[in-house]
Image (cartoon, rainbow, N blue to C red; front, side, top):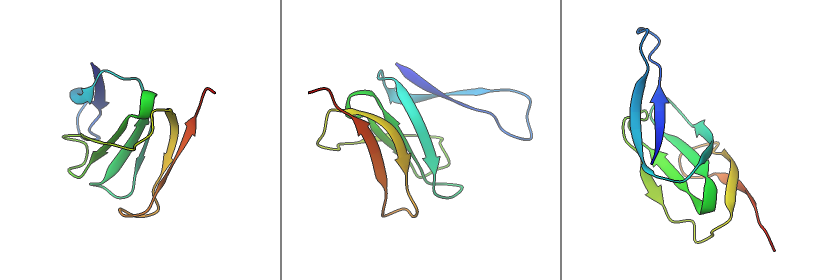
Amino acid sequence: MAVLVSFPIVSAAWETIPSGTDKDLYKAFFVNADTGFIAGFQGTLLVTEDAGKSWRARDPGFAGDFMGVYFPNVRTGSYSASMVC
């Protein structure tokens, strides 16, 4: 299972947060302090709306490896993917 690690600025300790997936995670992007997205292996897309305390999967309808993610706002964004033909 893949896990995310959070490092609070006011603390010297790292916190492990379960991601809910066992796939590799490649890139994260936060739109604001609360909303963020993660791109990963085999079409893995994760979203948080609570500053990374919890993550839920989104179904992209695509099984390629997502290598990048960018969202200019919470409703519009893009993922970059690699495909093997």
